[in-house]
Length: 94
Image 1 (cartoon, helix red, strand yellow):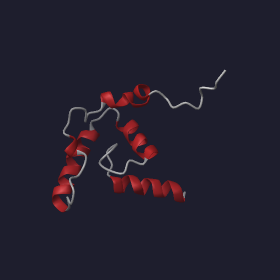
Image 2: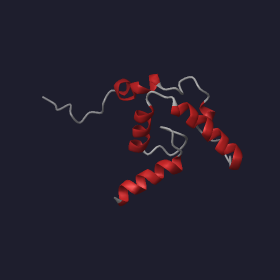
Image 3: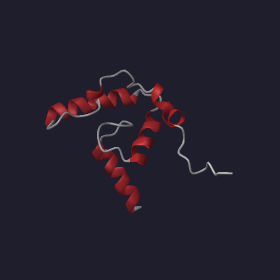
Image 4: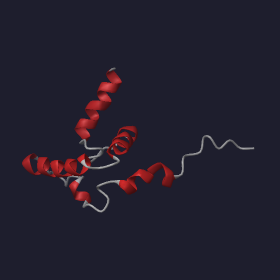
């Protein structure tokens, strides 16, 4: 009999938390910056994304996902890529 322990988890069960996200139905551009976005415009967009994350019932699952898969773009779990990178670097150093 084949061992199924090495098979990946079903997608629906792995990502089901996303159905409860405060961002569901929100404009994805709120969470992901357009090319060459800088300065006040970027900070305002990131603040708007973080405001949604602040009231999100699954923000912790979202952050855990982003850290686990090393999401390279956007605001996930209330943190920007630079903020997530800082956490990962601290984990690596510690």
